[in-house]
Amino acid sequence: MTSKKIGIFGGTFDPIHHAHLILAGDALDALDLEKIIFVPAAASPHKLDQKLAAPEIRLEMVCAAIEGMPGFACDPMELQRSSPSYAVETVEALRQREPGAELFYLVGEDNVSRLTTWHRFAELSQMVQFVVLDRSGVKTEHRYRAIRRHLDISATDIRNRVATGRSIRYLVPPAVEKIIRDRQLYREPQK
Image (cartoon, rainbow, N blue to C red):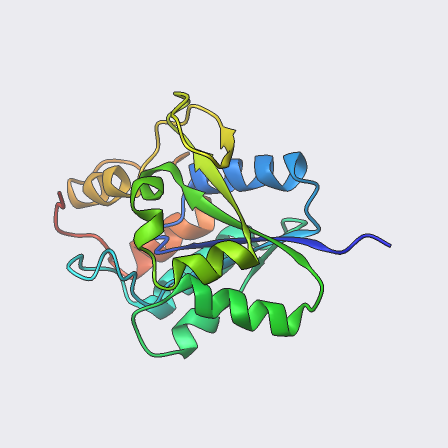
């Protein structure tokens, strides 16, 4: 009997966008995962100086973005713990919930260079297989399996587009665009 294969996709998702969804879908297929659990961070330890939309709004955007998408689930577990959010604690919780599952931790290419600085990295690396989601499409050198597709979409650009009154249609799912508009998020340009 083979064990369940589950992907964990953590991040700030500020906001979640189509590049996240496309690469997650590619990972679901390429790794033959049963599901990918999107886990919005309350506060990323590597982005503590960044002003984020409220955690509950980011969770709402993630859940709205993946609603009805087979193989995708959202989980508020990191919002239910004190900040900052540590991947190792999330993985420990999922191992208790899904004993025997093979866990794949999906990480953006922009995080690879500091991956070994993550809280309790040695333990974490024994519990999961890291998979790099690379939207640059450029082959970079690291030891992890990678899912690559050139997608020129970034959360920073989306926030800046909103702040300057430009459209974000086709960059985020319509439900996410509605939440951003209704909640009046990202009104100030960012770096």
